[in-house]
Image 1 (tube, one colour):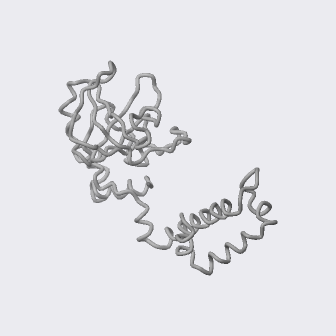
Image 2 (cartoon, helix red, strand yellow):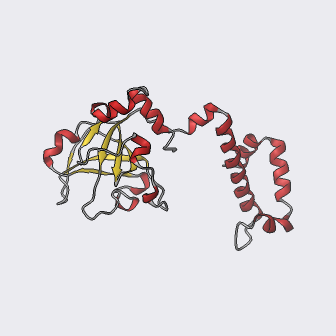
Image 3 (tube, helix red, strand yellow):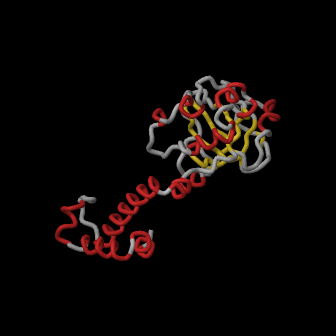
Length: 226
């Protein structure tokens, strides 16, 4: 966020007043106390502006429906569900597990080469919800239409995907939203196959009175903020 952006967002008068308030150098450390060691004035001013912007954006999201919609994820391609389970019981597909962690790109595995027909069902651009231990841990986008052979002993094949949503690195995944809150059920397919929401009886039952798949996608978009 540049100072020009901040001025335009806050308004010139508000920004000048805020800047003047911060410039009372003898009071900055006492008022904010953001650092153990006093930073330069401009470093602290930027942090203060960013904090104020975050506050104003939060209020804007509450009062402006269009702005609120802009914060929501586009989950119009969320069509699939996949249960994930590691043999050691740990969480799968953390940042440390990813082939390209900075881009959140990784290999989404299937157990056997016999699962190839199932693995190729999601199309490029489709979104898959990954469930682990009754928690939704990822929303991933399928990046191409290829099914690749895997040379790891535990897995047979994989698709290349990108996490468009996943927990931040410092979040305890045990505190993630459970499947009941997201899907209105805890009874999900236990296998590692991928399932189309519209082909599952429980999904049709739970969401038929709520605009079906589109209604579910809109519901989910409110739970997963980018």
